[in-house]
Length: 529
Image (tube, rainbow, N blue to C red; front, side, top):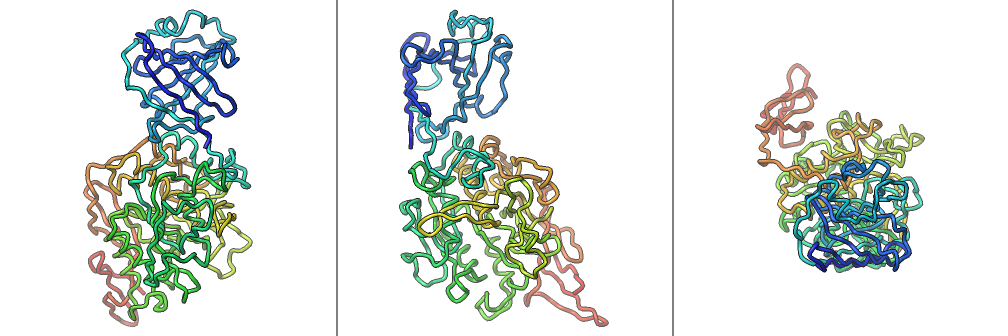
């Protein structure tokens, strides 16, 4: 990790600051005057020591001002319009005391301006009617660094690197929050390979939800190592990839069943969610789901009854945290071909579709209509899928190295990881606050607008900058139902819509050759079978 320590200290009655800052290439010693009028403090480069131009000023914005992410013009500072303002923030990976007191850094270039920098910072600000106040905080250390993970890259289109992190604005998001060890994500998957040099086993702990006691055994398939790496691979260790969360803890909940080709069963997912409930884990990532024929398959729900769907749904309802799930890879519209848990539309669930590098739905059209429910492309729905995240050509940890894969499985953990960052920064958030903060701060993209409820793609920086708080937790009551679906409304006006669930727990009746089913969830609403 290339860290640059910038120490702030009081050195004069005008609150001058002494800073040392390691840029991407050289050590720049900066003499600065701490001058602010509710928004700014300025730094003048010491040209004798670093050889930089004498006609530039560095402006470090206050935290609240920084979070506006405004495109400033010279008039905002009372300067002539010919002053050039360069945003240097994205050149650094910035955090204060390993926390989130984010500051944007602007450079004022007076090269072609009639403004006279020689008059000094104080006079320039005085002319712009900026008032000098006392120091806002005591001496601290600020670290500026760029992660040195070789596969991080710097482009949102280079699929040979982690383009997806740039697509969801992670570099800017990291300037705000990198994660807290007080937050744990439950990773329900096939297990994580701790022999991978980019996986820090001190941040991962394992529970085998299948009851087979495989906590100390490496997984047979790499699915969980990939999803776990997206969330929490080690960052700035000169190895492989950068994980989204640097300090968040991961509970590696193994749901892979050897007798089911090391894939999950309905029973193992139920056990995993129940475990997360018992441990008060606030966020779950489950990069999977079940179509109807699988949800009610006895082989996948091994209690001898055909009620796996109801039991899984109830397990999610009983869980107080946020459940992030993959929408599925069938390239189906979930309005007509449900996949669960996505299609239940429960208030604590976020369903994630996969977009490609061009911000379209990820799909392989040549594979579609081959009677397969896997790997045709991302499922979508303007009711049951909430947002998209990049899911094409995702590079992550795999086995003891890395691999590149595509699918909604690798879009979902990006959302779960961003949720963990948001909860790290705003620990008082409820599950509903967390869900709405993410969904209210997407990049709205026209090519995705008709295929998910939010109309866009995950944006980590916006989610961290614009928290959404509710005055209450939703209480949903069933008030409206149709032939195939029902709605439940909260008194605040929010509602959820879901398909009726049919299994042995419901009442059936035959009338003149037509079978009717009554769904207890919505008060006995009828559906033609």
